[in-house]
Image (cartoon, rainbow, N blue to C red; front, side, top):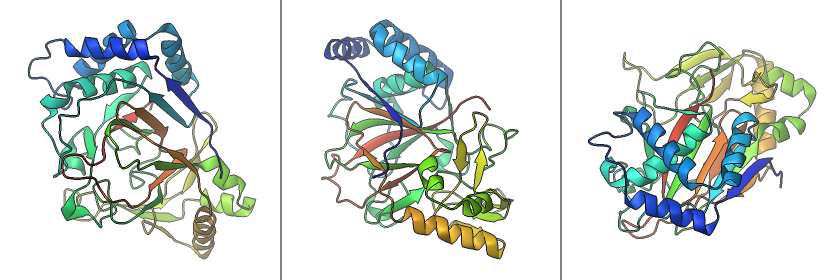
Length: 322
C-alpha cells in the first residue's frame, strides 16, 4: 500500500439537514442549466453552501484551496433523491438534478476552480455521467464496467504547457458527485511522488524528456478533420509551478520515440503494475476531487445493479489558475 496525502471533510448531521432543507426550496434558475450558464450555478451554489455550512467546514475548504493536497473528499452531503434513475445511455435530463449540480458547482467555486468541457468528448458537455452502459460494457471508458480501467490520467493527449488555453489544456482536476454506489465500487488513487520515488533517478529523468507520443482514448471523437487526436514529442513527467511533479499516462496510449524513452516507459509500467494505491469510495452524497496531474486513478470491473439503480457518479473536469 502506498498511501497518498489527501484531505477528508465530514459534514456534521445538522449541517447536512440544513443544506437538504435549503435545496428543497431551490432558487428559481429559470431554464438555465450548467452547460448554458455555469456561472449561475457556481454563484448560487457557493452562496447556498456559505449560508449552510459551518465555519469549520468552510475553513477546511479554504485551507485546501490555498494549499491543495492531491485529493479532497467531502462526505455526508445531502442525498440526491433515490427517485431519479441512473441513466442507461450516458445522459440525463439536467433539469432533474439541479440540487446536485448546485452543490457540485458550489464546491468548485469555494475551492477556487472553474468547470471545463472539451469539444472532443461527452458531446462537449460539462458533466459526464459515470454510469454503466450495456452497449459500452467492455470499453475502457467511464461507461464501461466489464473490464478494468488500469492506472491512467485523463486527457493526456492535451497540452500540458503553461500557455495552453482552458479548452486545450490537460484538466487539472477531476471532481465527482455521488448519486448512488450500491455496488460499493471504489476508485483507486496513486500519487506520482510515490511512483517516481520507487524508480531509479535515470528513469525519472528519461520520463521528463520530450520523447513520447500520445494518442487519445476511446471516449474521444476524431479531430475536426476526422483524424484521431495525437500529440507528438512531449514529456511524460514535468514540474508544476508549485514544484510538484506532474504526469500524463494512459496504457497503450503512450509510445517512446527513442530506445531510452521506451525503456523508461517499460520500467514505469512495470513499477505501477505492482502498486496498489489508495481506494476511495464515492457514495451517494459524497464529493471527491483529485489533481489529475499529480494522481493516477483506476477502477476494477464490476457487475452493475439492476437498471436504474446502478452506480452513478457525476464527473466534472475543473481548472485552477492557468
